[in-house]
Image (cartoon, rainbow, N blue to C red):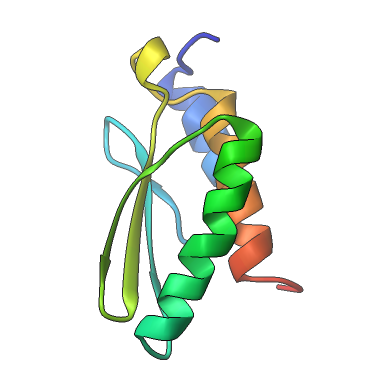
Amino acid sequence: MDALNEKQIAEGLANLEGWEYNGEALTTTFEFQDFKEAFTAMSRIAFECEAQGHHPDWTNVYNQLEIRLSTHDAGGVTEKDFRMARTIEALILPGE
C-alpha cells in the first residue's frame, strides 16, 4: 500500500471529525468522563485494530486518549489509516 500525498490526505480529512495531519500521521484526541470510560474505549478499539491488522500509536492519561495513525511499512499515511480512523469514529462517536 502506497503512502498518500498531501492533497489526498486533505480530501480524506474532510470526512473525519476532529482528526488532523501533522506531516507524519493522522492524529486526534478524545476526552472521556473518566479513566474507566477511556479504557473501555481503548479496549473496543483494540479489537478492531486486531481485525484490521493495524496498530495505532496511542497514549492514555486519565480520561484522555491521543491516537496517531500511520502505516510504518509505507512510510506515511495510507488508506489503511483512514479506514482505521473511520472505524474509531464509529466506535467512539456513534450516531454523530
